[in-house]
Length: 314
Image 1: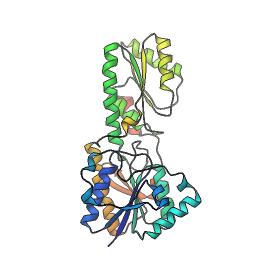
Image 2 (image 1 turned 60 degrees about the horizontal axis):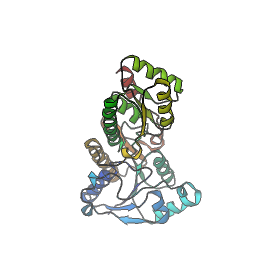
Image 3 (image 1 turned 90 degrees about the vertical axis):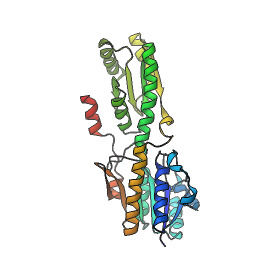
Image 4 (image 1 turned 180 degrees about the vertical axis):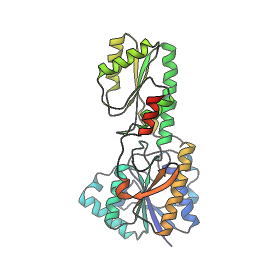
């Protein structure tokens, strides 16, 4: 009987639980023992390994977060911590370690693979910031959550003729911001450093075009939206409000798209486990499941040019 270990690492993303359940179902179907490292790489260091049973999972595919917990392990980044994790993983006599996470998690997966561990990596990050795949688990849900909030804010701003500045998550990738701006019909999108004066000119252009409640969507890590809101109110004489959506985007039931993506990724993972194919990052390109070497899988991206072109032409 084969034995597979799974861990979730880094920021949680809706769809992680859906993937865990789908993969657990496939393990049961193929008579494979499944165990989990609790709290990601930290669990490897502390040897916190627990069996996973498909029968006990209930309806976890409808839950955000991850039942096997996650963390960002600074200790794993040290030589001592990594070596301890490597020794513990080797002692488990696993056939494959499945790492579910984002760019940082993938780098850890590659280090373990280079050290002799059979590894497969699954993209799960709301930021959608992995270059090799069009979609990551949690991205679609995070976008929907952001859009739901922005729509509500926009409705109340319309009632009061106020402008609003909304910051969405995404780290250094603009995909959530761009998609939200397109679908919420934002007047201004900020995805790179701009002076307040330049943004003010765009706002004044919107006001001159009879826009009574300008909506500005801002990617995180760009500027202080509260300061921008105060500046715009002072310069235009129009009331502005700032909102940082934050962790509201991360949780909640995954969208149908994320649940289906989780199943597709789980099926491909099991195919590789059965065929003894390792050292791969599994993803999706043009709606088809794909796989690349981990060397390529760790490459980050900052934004989708396709989305940006849609926004510019809309």
